Length: 492
Image: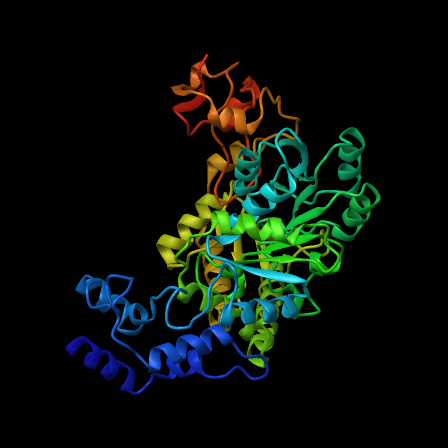
């Protein structure tokens, strides 16, 4: 009983300012999962059920000191204390998903607790059967490939446009989608990633029109575009442009905790909701974290609130300031919305005489700045809803300091020609599923030409894949595999 009394004492302590922000009602929308968790927190009972740490009593002291008293106290699952269930959605969780659907303009929204990955897996299983063709952008996240392995579908790869000056792959064009559909009349659906990791947006409306003419569903991996429905100066969400379903990684840019995302099904979607939910239940944990569910509910409520709108406006103003300030420096170049349709909160920039990876190292070591990612050509930074102006100003100061200090990277200048995988159709020998299920072996890279690849070889964060399971390894791949001493192939 002492533990129970101690739990009550924890709750009756004066809440910090941060706690008050977490648990206070949002201005217009409210967060039913957050409210349910608040009630659970304020009315503790004797816990004789999982999780076994019993509200933080049985965890390592160093860990508890690091995360504080309240986090382990709130670490519960949706099976207890009238908190509702995820599958099927009941109580506060069902209400929160309905509110999210309204906020994002969907017919139905599902909360995801394994990132957008689990949404992609469920969509692949729902829409494609074994040996069916699926039209897929080659710049897809690796979870898309996993869904092809699980469903047994055969990918028909569509290559994105190439931005030579930036060392990036850009949009998927409507013309390339139509060409693929003409050649593959049996295609189960079309799968496009927009925006790209660097924020480049495809013409989803035109792609949706093409898909409608061929009567195939369109799935858009919009993982990095979850803010779009909350500000008119951001691109239009695919849900409004004709997509049948969209995944959003709220944890990436929307403010929820890592590993939490949403799957939205459009109003006029051709997707069978019963089958989709059955596949989500098949893939999801049976012990979902209520903290993650609450973070999704909270993020949606925040984005809808006045505070959220102000935060997005600030992120856009910060981005504009950064672009304007750096554009005045002769040796700095930023990928501009004038060149391509892009999400302005994502800034890809390059500095003359420095590779992106060298620039990343300098920023991290000399200035204690961590960026989103780096390539040979440049770096990607995000103007987040949580950033302060001082963060952006300091970054600009540091870039100016780096240029004035005369840092250089000779190796980058000498390898100007080779940036990334050339756009060419892969030689597919067998389906991803068959390759995944085959016996494999590790062999030296020098012996790999002519063998069938059995692993995904792609830069992470996700870019265009160099090789995927079931594809023939050719001499043209070798310049892009220099970091590999060995490679996994199908046994002969």
